[in-house]
Length: 122
Ligand code: HEM
Ligand code: HEM
Image (cartoon, rainbow, N blue to C red; front, side, top):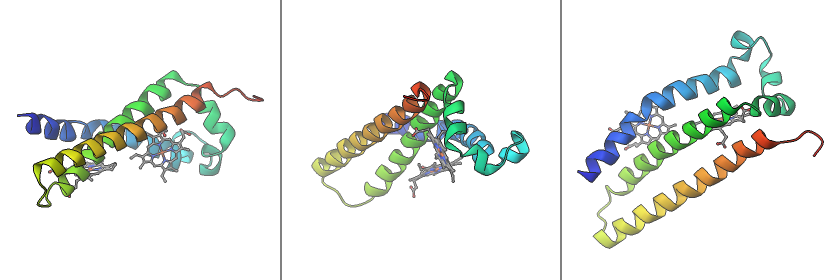
């Protein structure tokens, strides 16, 4: 039951990833089409900081971070668990994957928060 729920979540986050990653690609790769600016300008530090002030962006990026990380980490766990592991070792893999995921989530959240609270000139 627990496995079914974890796997379902791995699949249910896919629409979130597809939509938010699509929006991210629109900003990073198709800025001339959607925002009337060059790709270089869209990835410029000042433009990034300007975008970063948006609360919507803060929330959506953290959501994308969580969804993609969960999907990716669950997928990697599935690959590792296909190996003939002892139950004790499988437990260690789970703890390692969850710890790594939480660490990257903290790092990614910090980065997004950093751009959100960045003050030009200090
Ligand atoms: C819109 C984007 C994406 C779609 C449509 C997608 C779709 C899928 C699907 C259908 C599966 C197989 C699920 C299953 O049968 O259990 C899968 C597995 C996986 N996905 Fe994604 N995914 C996307 C993005 C990502 C991203 C961004 C990552 C990395 C962070 C990722 C990493 C993985 C991994 C590691 C697996 C396991 C592969 C395996 O078992 O061989 N995916 N994905
Ligand atoms: C070549 C492709 C990519 C480029 C050029 C790019 C560029 C950037 C930039 C400049 C930011 C800072 C925020 C902003 O300016 O809007 C950012 C943030 C972010 N990107 Fe990407 N990105 C790419 C691909 C991806 C992919 C494939 C994913 C997820 C599967 C992703 C997930 C994120 C997340 C979650 C953030 C928020 C910051 C964080 O959590 O660390 N990006 N990206």
